[in-house]
Length: 103
Image (cartoon, rainbow, N blue to C red; front, top):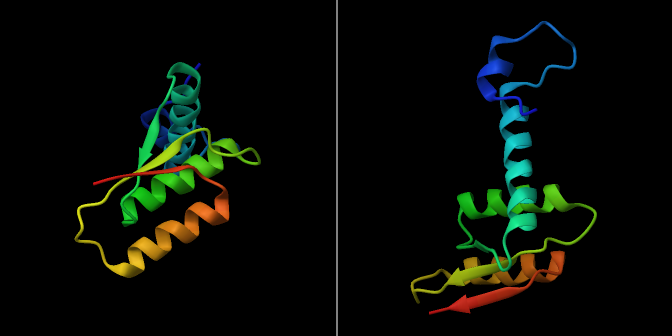
């Protein structure tokens, strides 16, 4: 059975009820695990921006302590700040991720 965010928001007064953000995070982790089980070669688009950093954080959380079964895909437009590329490479090395760069 899946608990929706709306059901959590209504609340039951239970000490085990998830907060709104915990419910969203739980749903995101579930989706990552479902994608890993259903698809052959998924990737996480990674630009180094706040949205893709959050997606990577959720993926790391979903599969910890194992490695993330997805590769990162960075579409390099040639308009990136050098600091973003350094961060991307440092993050890939730190977590032992696979990186594909397309341009």
